[in-house]
Image (cartoon, rainbow, N blue to C red; front, top):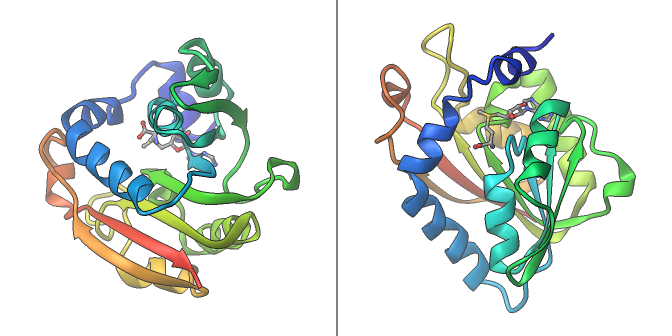
Amino acid sequence: MSKYHLLYRLRITPWERYRTAAAGSVARLLNREAHERPELGRALDLGCGLGHYTRELARQGWTATGIDAVAGAIERARTFGDGDVGDGHVRFVEGDVRDLAEDLGTFDFFLDVGCLEGLDDADLARAAASITARANPGATLLMLAFGPRFHWLIDGLSREQIERAFAGWTMLRVEPAQTRGLGWPMNMTSPHWYRLRLA
Ligand SMILES: C[S@@+](CC[C@H](N)C(=O)[O-])C[C@H]1O[C@@H](n2cnc3c(N)ncnc32)[C@H](O)[C@@H]1O
């Protein structure tokens, strides 16, 4: 059983606290993403957990899919509602970001809040290849990652690791993420938001 299967079974989901604390800053980033586009297409929320961001994307008008490897998380995400939300649509599927199924279709926007940072270099490369295969030309990826691992309990990635894995993508922007709401020691990890575009 993976760390996340166990955590969901025990109903220990500390990242939900950050979602609440950082709601304003995340909303600004998602609004900026939406406003840069003449029309919103299909979005994939990688490691969506309980699907709060997936539903937020749908409220903005995206046709949003949330994917997570833990069946229990997807079941709970669905209980908060799927189908039409706001101007968009939301659905949830169980699956692995390292091996995105072809029948998911292709996407214009990928959101990653705390999923890819948990992968080692080999799995990150697999996930990047899988995401690239499911990306429409000009697709963007917005990801939040802690800095490189400094504590055995906390995952993280460096900018170099991300750029190496997503070699076919252009790094558009790197900006520090809000640390309020993270608690110690996560608030010491120098988290950043990375925005990349498929060249
Ligand atoms: C830190 S939690 C963040 C959840 C959600 N993005 C949020 O911010 O509320 C990371 C999520 O990634 C999921 N995850 C981890 N590895 C995964 C993989 N290989 N494929 C799909 N989901 C994965 C976990 O089950 C967990 O729900």
